[in-house]
Length: 230
Image: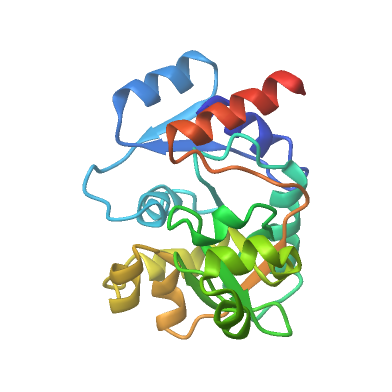
């Protein structure tokens, strides 16, 4: 799975180098044996971003660092490209991320699927494992959120799934890694909330194509089926 992610990252036109940051020697060896770059990192990092920051500290010539999680084997190279472009086009922004439409109502109620809401300029307002925004009137009418989503499919258009990738300006990433975990970050177990709680603007870009983060055996089965068909 990690090798699939590497191949897709390297296919993005504005990615010049891809490294796997890991604290697992099995992953390190598998990546190196396949001919790619891998770096062993500390096992004590609290988040993936902190792990990426350790490697970024050694990449002194880099201006933008992209963090693609190893459980996103279907991520589109164009999605990565769009996130980097958004950051390049906004000198005031420190980081960007991506989102995509939700087509299955069960993803909205699943805590394994992170949702994001943005303002009119495409800047993140909040990320949550809970359903946001909450369709209050529809829920009152149908008795539950699940029933409302099943009976009013058009409600799905109000939701966006957060895709697990980020682009950072390197100097900001190193600064971020020095900050202590914040209250909301710890409650939701979502590292990007550390940035929002420190008043950092996060640009949210619509993904070029759907992706699936592999968090469960069911997710893995779905990804394998898609790859076999394509």
